[in-house]
Image (cartoon, rainbow, N blue to C red; front, side, top):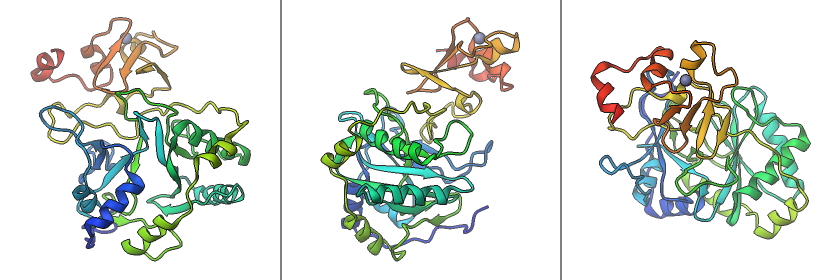
Amino acid sequence: MPTHTTAVILPVTRAQAVQYMILFVNRRAYLRQSHYPSKKSGRFYFYKVCDRVSKQPLSIDAATVQSHLAGHLTIGVYAINPDSQCSKWIAIDADYADSRRDLLRLQEAFRKDGIESLIEQSRRGGHLWIFLAEPLPAKLCRLYVLNVARRLGIAIKQNKEDGIEVFPRQDELQPDEFGNAIRGPLGVHRASMERYWFEDAEPTLEVQLQLLCQVKRVTREELETLTAGMSPIPAPVPAMPWVQLPAAGSQNHGFHILSYIRTHRRSGKNYVGQCPSCAQRGEDRRGTHLSISVAEPRMYHCWAGCTKEMIRSALGCPIPSSVRFAQSA
Ligand SMILES: [Zn+2]
């Protein structure tokens, strides 16, 4: 239920936008949160901003960040730059009933390791942020946080169960992958039209950015020392990208297979799941027939030979005859 119907617009300088980019932007591709809820789920999804003709991701710039901070639009930022496999920050997202308690426990454990972290409020819980002195390997970021969480007995989210989500959510990305993104802090959440501020600082852009620029950053040496001897924790592959919708204005926007299929596993560049059409015939009990491209979820394929038409009708949303031919191209 929206708290406000319109966003409160704040004055923002270009210098503030540049400061924000230094803090949060680690690759040029970015997302925007839809201004309208999805008809199906009522959620305000994020979509990757792409050129309408070439379909290539557009680059974020200071003007876009300025609009985000002002409240005209809301961006999502990717954690990992695939060129370096590094992230500039770690964010821990927790949105279940007792999540604040877990974030505070993590914050305390980090403090004991000499790591400062900041809690940003969110619509349902909070995001705990750690800032890095330079972009550092996503793999080490995850190794550290997942080990601390395990030591504290804090659950990592898998599918629909409660638990924290750690961004970066992948150890590494393929060159054509984007990984997961998180709502850019200090902007307006389109669902509630609220801004969620970092705690322990006055809720103005000026003071908040000052806090973010002053917080102690984790150095490479510190992260390497802390993670030495830690063993990798097999964390579940995200069931689906946090956001994956086609660019605004693109054709063919009605159907998203990832809204229907629970994908538990990933194999190479694809998610693997149960083919709904095979399942209807009592086949594919192990849930391995369907492959969905991670980079382009509109591309999916049943290894047992079910057609797109069969899969769509098994899901209860058959392909309308007018687009059937266009789609098979
Ligand atoms: Zn099938």
